[in-house]
Amino acid sequence: MFKLKLLKRKKKDTPSRAGLGILVFENTSQVIQAEKALRKNNWEIRVMGPPPQIQTGCDLVIEFALIKKLSIMRFLENLGLLPLKLVPVTHPLLQPVDLFQVKDFGKFLMIRAANMKITVEKSTRLIVNISGGGCPDVPYLAFRLVGKPLDQAPDPVDIGHTLCGYALGLAFKEMKKKCSQW
Image 1 (cartoon, rainbow, N blue to C red):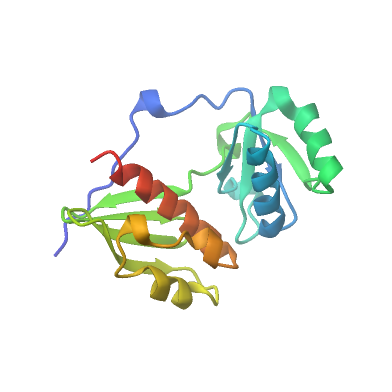
Image 2 (image 1 turned 30 degrees about the vertical axis):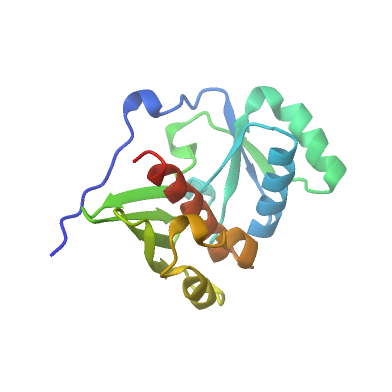
């Protein structure tokens, strides 16, 4: 039986939530479009899971510094990507949920983003498993990724077409970051 070990962030790595807000969009497609546009224009943002109080399904939200509220809202309005609501993170229950969970199985490392998981053999950096989600492109993503070294596998964001592909892409990028530390 595998021994599960959940890696936790150190307190110094956890940013203060004071002065942050979240943008809530109608659907995940809009979140993905807004994220790409904001990152392309060097905005400091994070895509997160929504707080339980405002979750309506397979949601994502964008966390940002409230001091940039007017600029970000004007920028998104010019793109036709206005969020449904903007919520200041003023209460602990309104904090967005970190999308990543990391589990070290000794020989293997698994990273979960939303409902998608990627598992890599640590010594070879070979992708050994893709699982989770319920989107129609998950089997295709697994077919394209499993058995390939992490640095030679295609980015799931480039070959996927659903929220599951996007979430797997986030886990894939986080896995590459973790593996670069070894």
